[in-house]
Amino acid sequence: MPINIAIIGAGAWGIALSLQMARTGANVYLWSRKELPNPTTHTLSRLDCVSIPETITVSNQFPTKADIVFLAVPLQYMRSILPYMPPTAPLIACCKGVETTSLKFPLEILEEIYPKREHGALSGPNFAHEVAKSYPTASVIASKNPKLAQELANKLSTSTFRLYANTDPIGVEIGGAAKNVFAIAAGIAMGAGLGENARASIITRGIAELSRLSAGLGGDPMTLSGLAGVGDMILTCTGQGSRNYSLGFELGQGKKLKDILAQRTTVTEGVTTAPAILQRATQHHVNTPIIEAVTHILNEEITIQTAQNILMSRPLGNE
Image (cartoon, rainbow, N blue to C red):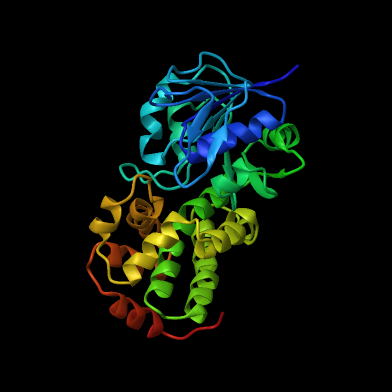
């Protein structure tokens, strides 16, 4: 018997997830903040128009029941919709970042609001338009409950969407959040004409920062060598579809942040994540020089040239 899956959020990622979950044979309920003008088609930002199959119900009413709930709304809005979730079903966070008011990762918010519910996080190198088109994709489903993680991986994997179970949600969520900040850094380097060597160094040393941060917050640094770390970092720092990379690229070309954001209709998570994750790192006495530099550039406290000078003149050490 098909399982019932609720996807909360009808942005590009929410619709892509809905299409993927429908491929498993599940009955999918897609919640949209606004009622869609046509229930069978929806034009995705930066994606082709896709057809919504009959197994996906689209509505602006919150679902009353589900076997699994995937939360695909931007993180800064997630808390506001949590009181309306159907009871008992496991809640899977598909958003990435750090809540600016509480400095919490998605699962920390879920544990605060629903301490007795099962929780998980879906993360990895996943561009929405490629998942929507059923391109081969691998991702991670993480939960403190290994049985839940493995069960979801078994139920939701298909021939083009491979899920790996993981029991380190802290490491997975750190990777998903911070990689957007490093993507901005990589974009800045390329936009400013600093070269491929600089981008490769940002990616590599960014992984080192992720590993230190994971260890400092109680996660497993080895998690960052997998899909939720290296995999997501490479995609977001090099893929032309990365919103954070493209924002950094424009900053590197000399454009002002406010002007870049004014032209965008989608959320660029790294902008709010950078200062928030820097605060978390500072609280746990973790050194994150690239995250710090990006935060100061976004706040217009230093120039790109000054950031380069600071990063390149740091005390030398062993890798």
